[in-house]
Every structure is written in structure tokens, then in C-alpha cells.
Length: 252
Image: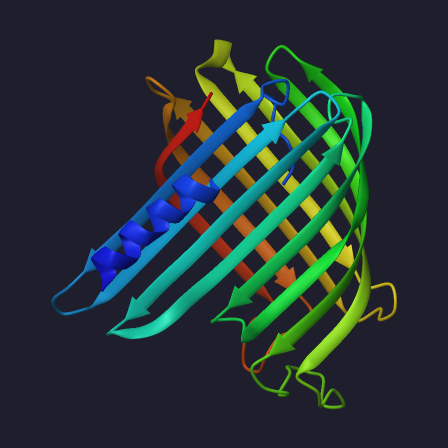
């Protein structure tokens, strides 16, 4: 089962394999990364983490699809399972200022999220795009609907529905930088998603990754991810922190 799941994950990333990267002047971009471990004996634990991206950019438009997945068990009981699929359609992506449309789908076992869908338009402004350096900011307005597993929420006794719908405004910064003559690559992303209609409904996310390029598109990669949600199932924590090490592949 685990071998089949691993193979399926890699195949999915290769096929469907977010914002545009520093290579957004190229027609096609691909990127995959994966880490995992399997411990058996006194403790049984299995963890699989993977990401995949594919982008196609033309002169006046571009598309990008990015998938990340986490799966884990502890003594054969599932404790980790989350998939996030982000899709973007860009207009005039080579301009300093360009609009886009976003559709985002998420499921999360550990967060108790059966389905989460949000969609809406946005705008990106590129502050720096030169010599392997990229820095940009974006703003997105979305409508979101989330279906939770139960109506039991932490510190929200008056909330008694499993379906929560809201409008959100998202502010985001993204950067890529080549360091030490290209021997290191730093990527980072930070976004905040407050609800427009509910001041107590807030999400935030920050991540950073450092890669050491090897040969033919491969790189050693370590990343740290932090996320926060103010509306969570009881007894879940508001924050999650994940640190990973692994191998990535990018083309071109």
C-alpha cells in the first residue's frame, strides 16, 4: 500500500507537475520534490511529503498548477494527511504589473477539513526580476467555503455549523535569490488571509527553502513551513510547524 501510494504521488506530480518563478520568461517549467521515512520495530511510523509544479507561459497569458501532499501514520493509524492544489491563470505575466485568477482546493485529515475551496481574482506587482533575483507582492480577493468534519471548534462555542463561508483578502510576498554565485538558492513566501466578514477568522502562512544545486536540475533542499488558522477543530492547535530535508528536481 505504501509503495503504491509513493508511486502514485510521484506519477501525479510528474503529470500535473503559486506564482510564477524567476524562469517565467520560459515556455514550460517543471519542479518536483519529495521526502519520506519509514520506521519499523519498537515504533512504527511512516511519513511521505511531496510537492509538484508545472507552468506554461506564453506572451500574453500563462497557467500554473502546484500540488503539495503530506501523508503519515503512527502505529498504522493515520495521523497526517493533507493535500493542497493551487491553480492560477495569468494575463500579461511578463509585465511588471499583471492580473490573475486563482482556484485553490484543500483537504486536511489532521485539521479536520473535508473540503476547502476558494477562488477569485488578484494582482501581482514585480519589484525585482533580474539576474536570478526575484521579488514581488500580490493581493487577491476570494470567496471561500470550508466543510469541517465536525461542528466542534476550539474556543468558539457559539459556532455550530460544519460549513463556513466567507470572503477573504490575501496579501502575499514572494522571493527567489541566487546566493554565493549561484551555489545556493533561497526561496520564501509569506501570505496573510483575513476574512472580510469575520474579524475572528484569520489564516497566515510562511515558508522558506534553501537549495544546493547539483547536476542536471537536481538539488538538495531543506524547507521550513509555518501556518496559522484561528478557526480549528477541537482539540487541534492553532499553529503547525514543519521542517523537511530532501531532493528536488526542476526543469528548466
